[in-house]
Length: 513
Image 1 (cartoon, one colour):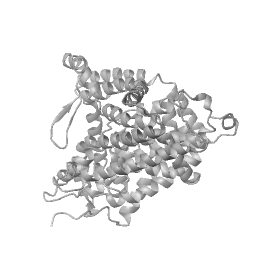
Image 2 (cartoon, rainbow, N blue to C red):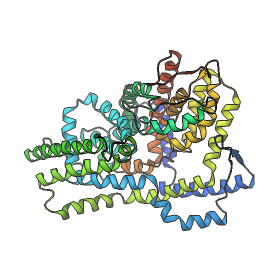
Image 3 (cartoon, rainbow, N blue to C red):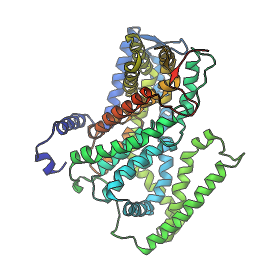
Image 4 (cartoon, helix red, strand yellow):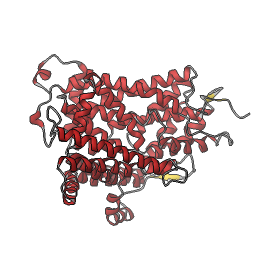
């Protein structure tokens, strides 16, 4: 933060964020912290196991007990599966594969030149909104927004003289909100519906839940999040961060001349042409009947691989035109340099992978999720208070269990039937699913259990080398509160006014005919 910011009369919110940042940054290095978390989980698993803590899975009636991580079996599993645990860490392969393509586009200068051209075409007043919107829409590419949009947000703000962490925060907020807002259906829609439908059939055996169950409210939330996120960035987060001090930089390499050269412009034109051809190639793979990626699930599952080519091929064309690539060795060197840049993330990923795996082995995540769900069920809320409480509990559980499908697999058999019968009429399964999606999204940006959280810290440390968990939580807390409040309010109004949630979906459950 700047001297001016630190010496002026500070508001309560500024002082609160300062306290959060100081407290969080007083924590050990993130790698050390994850190993401390592992020790805590191991001790907690032993205590809960000795106490005989158990819950009953609401969907399968399976008794889930705490598993002692100090047992001979789990210690053996830790050592024998160590390499597999690390290699199978979901974000690891995604990050490294995508970065191979992005690395070529970055090292050739394509990304910097394209960003400069983009910045010159977007008014400063719309830059934040455009960035948040891009983050929201990035959920079409599954989790790739965490890898692509967030670092680009920091670079964009850095390139126009604004604080790069504000750009990083805006992009992070947009990517996180994208899981409960989008203009299009995403891979999450059929996944959640596949759990909602059998839960509903516990009450009504003939009930079906369409994949489009939440499409309309997802579309409506998109501009709402853009507006709220823009306000938070420009009026709260960026003033809190103050003027950017370049002396804090750890590893920033942004080459953005005042004007693009003729060679760069020619390279951009060639890159644009190759991008168009790549897009046509993707269409040929996905659209014709019988094409390799014609099925929706196959297309969604291939997005990461398609992104590699979408960055690599234009980057290759640009590099050849501007003279950065003269032989195949140059391309290989660029990819190797990119992997070297990811060294810090790989170390963090090793620690994070084992913490998340051991948390899962202990069954503590399932116990926390099921116990919390049962407690809310026993409170006896009805109507709007119940649905709001459900959103809140979903957000809290999301701090402990990151996977949206894993949580919903546990929660749906409890909450879908309960809310179907919570009144006369009750809430439809589609309504309950929409409420879950809202609660599942806005706390993503606060939990270190998010698999991409270590990567966010690495991105931040490129610009402010002392950035830590506390720094990220401090600047993301306003977004979490803002998105949580506004999305809950929109949802409540949606229900009260009886607006349709999506094609083929209903708001209320009237009971079996």
